[in-house]
Length: 262
Image (tube, rainbow, N blue to C red; front, side):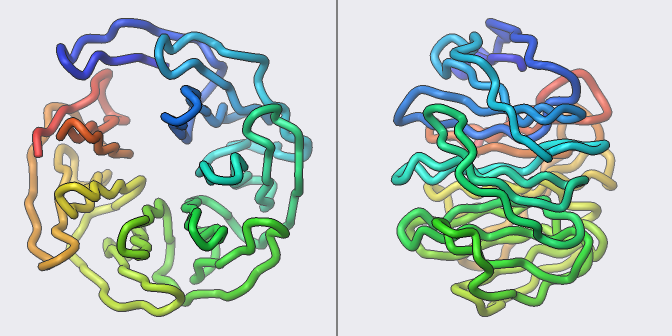
């Protein structure tokens, strides 16, 4: 995992966490970073201030297979970490302080994107192998509802302020807007959207277009206006927006991270 100083755009630390790190979640309240370590059954735990290992990795029984843990999100109120185990077709809830397994539930085909509605204690789970997004009870992981989705749903992002969910659909090149369990809008024209992010300050969704080569697109969540941005790398796979007004794109095809100023 690389640690980048946002003031200088320089890599200031590199931490070994294991093979194929995938999902990453930052808990700014408690100063922790959680990293899903693919090809293992572990989640690495880092100190957000230094990027160094903060404690022993969390072991997730049954989270095995070609990918291992992948999509994740945290409920900062209950301090529960939710991890999608793509190959094993399960979702697990972990105590984010100790790594203790709280619950593991079978899901069906290809659980991938995870987004938490902390206020309602609900978990949205994108089922990549099905045409659905499941709404889970944050305590029991029982399925409370199932939302019809486009084929190949991938990354999810939640708007805590306005209570909206955004879903990237890799196979159809679309982004879906959902309020509660109702689809309100579908925007098309994106090329292989994967791990999207939402910036509540600018009200923009940032969409890495993996198949487009070198493009990340901003989608205004109020107006539907799009803002294509050519980046310095290729095959963007994930974005992250920061309070300081930067958007970062992790580029699968090159050894760099692109920086976009909103």
